[in-house]
Structures are given as structure tokens and as C-alpha cells.
Figure 1: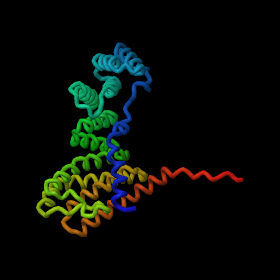
Figure 2: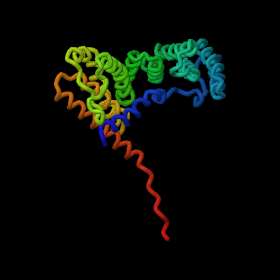
Figure 3: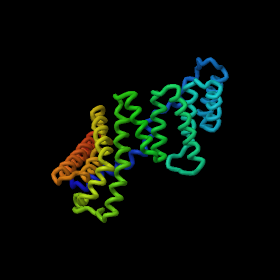
Figure 4: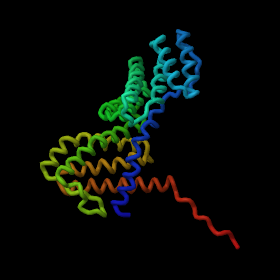
Length: 288
């Protein structure tokens, strides 16, 4: 298979991946909550029970009100604040930038920040804020919360993956804009998809802007694969970040090595995808 085809295949998978960022957060879902409550303020417990009931009925505005009441009545009630953030996220539409939608996103973030004031290592709140920041295109802040998740539990592969994703999300537009400005955004070989090298002055400038993020992204994606060897998405982003790294190299040999490694990760990811999703066995004709 030609490199251009492999690259397009993996890129099509990768570009859709960040939209599923919410799957990572594993929010504490009030619909699955055990509504027994041992908090000292019974009125707060009752508000949580009512909030869970409303949430299960998909009446999210009422759920938000009840969980907010519970948090106000008992400021130390962590679950009430977690449920409040979760209920608010049910009303938030990622990508929609209306004032009301942004207000809901900010309120959800405030609810999870309130959790972190009580428990700075609360992983659900950290992951939720990282999710919200990603959707709001606050990429550096999202990255910071993913790094905090790594500090809380360095054995989980997902935060390492998302650091790599966020590093690529920041670096890729810079590279594309530079190539557009220099009129170097057409591949030298359409069949291979190899872009022309940048002029030295532009390469040095891009290396100063992207170099640290590219290296950080590569290291974190490798760690994600170390922890989860069948992580196709991390392999896909390793491909993309090695292509970013190739644009930063001073020597032609180093550039070619980066492109070779990028192709290797494409091949590995496609081979793994084929093993995980084998083609349906062809039906044989019944015996005559």
C-alpha cells in the first residue's frame, strides 16, 4: 500500500478521535448513583435524591437545581458537586458557541473546580475540566489538567495519549500556516504525500515554536503505548507527530528517519486494526 493511502487512512481515523474525548472522563453518572447518603445535613441528602430522580428522568434543569441546592446546603458534599457538573454537561453541546452554551460550560467547569478545592486529586473532576477545556479550544489548559491526571495516577494510559493529542493540535496549525505563507503546502510526491523541506530560516523559527511540544507529545504517546500496547489511536498520533518532527530537522537524514518512523507507526496501527477487526469470513457454497 502506498504511503499516501496509509497516511490518509490513519488521518481519517485520527481526526475523528478528539470528538470522543468525553468517553475518557468516565463521569460519575447520577443515573447510576446509589442515593444512600451519610452526610450530616439531611436536607442536602434529600436534594441529591431529588436531583438523581430528575436526572434519571432526563430533566436536567431540575437536576442542576437540586444538586446546586445540595452543594449550597452542604459545601463539603463532594458528590453533590460532581453530580452538578455532570448534570450541567448534559445540557452542554460541544462546539456550539452560543452565549448560553458557553455559560453552561463555564458553570460545569466551576462545579468541578469546587470539587478540586475539596480534593485536589479528584480524577473525575480533573478529567472533566480537561474535557471542557478541549471543547472550548483552551488547549494549553486542557493539557495542564491532563498532566495533573498523570501526576495523580501515572499508570493510566489515557492522559498520556491526550497530552500527545493536545501537543499535535497546537503544532499542526502552526506548520500548516507557515507552509501556506511560503507556498510550500503541496507534496513533492503526490503518491507518497511527502512535503518539501522548509527553508532554513523558517525551519529554525518553527523548531523554536514547536520543538518542545513535539518532543513532549512523542514521549507521552510512547508511554501510552507502553501502558496499553494495542492503543491504535496513540500509534496514529505518533505517525502525525513524527511528521511534525521531520519539518524541524536540520539534516536530510534525520528528516528521512522521522518519515520512516511515521510510516512504521502507520503500518503497525493498520495491522493491529486488521487483527482487531478481521474481515468477515467468506461464505462457502453449500455442498451439492
